[in-house]
Image (spheres, helix red, strand yellow):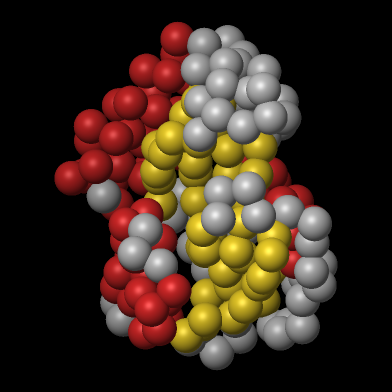
Length: 181
């Protein structure tokens, strides 16, 4: 049963982004192959959830400078067995920002990404199968967290000055397209 929700979300995502068929199929193959795909104990990789979080003016994205990965990233994290990835994204954003007024700007998955996490503290390198959701908040003040060195609201047009990460820049392109529809 736990697979039905994520497979349904992936199918809906594919109707919005048909050119991402190979990526969606990679997610489905992983989910259908590993019963423990929602657990971080799955050594090859696991499902994660994150958010492209926009401010109330819809002109800035919230980014964190991740202490371990040394990159500017969106808030998010491990499912740890929770099969409701939207709920995981909300929880992770709240834990990493302190923000609680979080609202979806669209139903379903906004972006997908598979990325390599390097070996660290005895944990081998593995993949994150990240499902990303588009959220906004009316609150601007956030709190620091122990997983990040820095955090900031960054104007959509200025994100590329902080990072060249294609997965972040792709979310910016998708955000602009969504807002201009």
